[in-house]
Amino acid sequence: MSRFATCLLASTMLIATGAVAAPALMVQPKSASIMAGGVGFGSIDNTYNQAGLAATYVDEVTDLHSFASTLHTSTFACCEWFSDSGTTAATVSYFVSASKPNSIDHLVLWNEESSGVGAFNLWYGSSAGAMTTLLIRGATPFDNPLADYPGEVWQFAASPKTGWYTIEASGCPQPNPGSFSACAIGEVAFGGAVPEPASWALMVAGFGMVGWSLRHRRHQIVSA
Image (cartoon, rainbow, N blue to C red):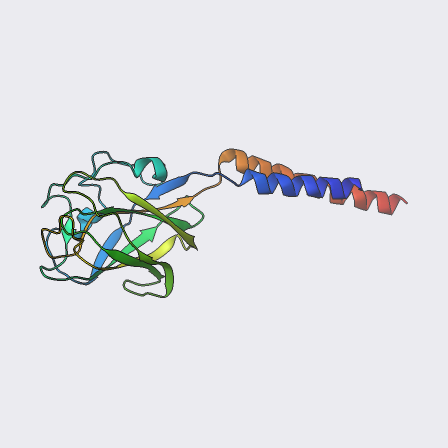
């Protein structure tokens, strides 16, 4: 194998291996709009402002997977949003605009316990309520008991880091305990992976090796 081919293969391996296992960072929505099932009870802002969580996260800094185990309190009024009484479906759009992640590919949902969402679809669109790209179909969140509860994480295909992500909820409320007929969300967060500094260093080194090999090979040809 020529030196050029060897360097190219090594660079490709460095790039491929350097980009794996990057952590997913929490991304907090910037705003939310109720598209169906509202006005409802409580503020929709409480579903993404961390009001009901036992700990707070730093936007685009905190690791998503470790933080998803944080408990949401079962206290109503300050910390959750419920659709209109008697509704069994609701649609809420969240505007996401991230800087660090390359894309958005995770959803964390703290599913409220007394009026939990039975199933949901997640859509992406360029405007509020625009359901252009289906990212998650028919997800069934855990039916939480009447107590403080953790979030659940869903991963989906890498999607734009700026735009509207719409949760289309149905099957509300879940039966246990199902004490209030509505669709309710405790908290929502999104997330995306970013290359770690070591990954960037490997990628830069790999491209440098390719460039050096090309220049060196060109010089050998001209000299011959």
